[in-house]
View 1 (cartoon, one colour):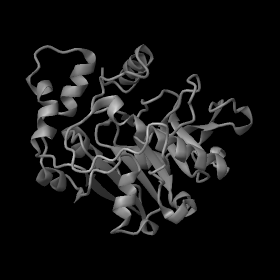
View 2 (cartoon, helix red, strand yellow):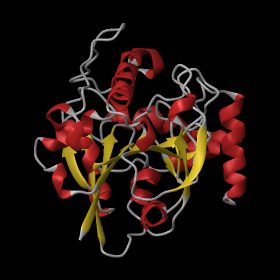
View 3 (cartoon, helix red, strand yellow):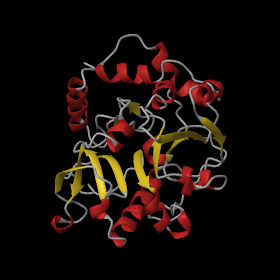
View 4 (cartoon, one colour):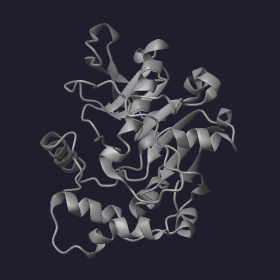
Length: 294
């Protein structure tokens, strides 16, 4: 059996995410293991209170409807496990790929063919992610290395074969740091992990804002409080450059944060659009129309 590993950072605890993600169709002769690596408990009062206003809100906009669906009820650890997840509680050090490092202290990535690392404030739109990747010869987008300008590349549409090491959710070549992995919903082949120093992601590069760890903290802090974590996306981007892995990178869509499989939340909410504004909302509405959600 070939195997897929799904690692979710347990912080926002969207009930929709945890109940829908494990409903992915499984390709023939494959298995999928799901792990929630929690950095605070789903039952903690801070976890529940941060989204309670959505459950009490009267009246809806397009975006708040999606947020309310994401947090329809405060999910518990027991319900997460019943939905098919293994559950681990780890120190609240750093987000994104750090959960892989923490998981690796107890498990062996070499047992898996590829690994999806995801935030738990993502809106899951499809149950065909893995079957599309493995069985259905879907079209994806590949950066063209010779078109590089700064951190931007033109792309070409290609069939997703086995010649990839890293898949990110959405790409927009019109933004200055287009080629900067978000870490919100990304897939890493085992062979890429083999290439990492000590087979771990470097999450402790000291960028301009310093190193931020939040061990013991249970409250969300919004954009600026953990802006230093963006350094680690740059660290991984440089790893892709140095390893000649631009041509091994793929994207599910040409719309940042939005693909047919997932809408990436921003600091807990689909409605947040600090970085992308009207472009994001337009892309989201178009995708929802395309898949007949609206």
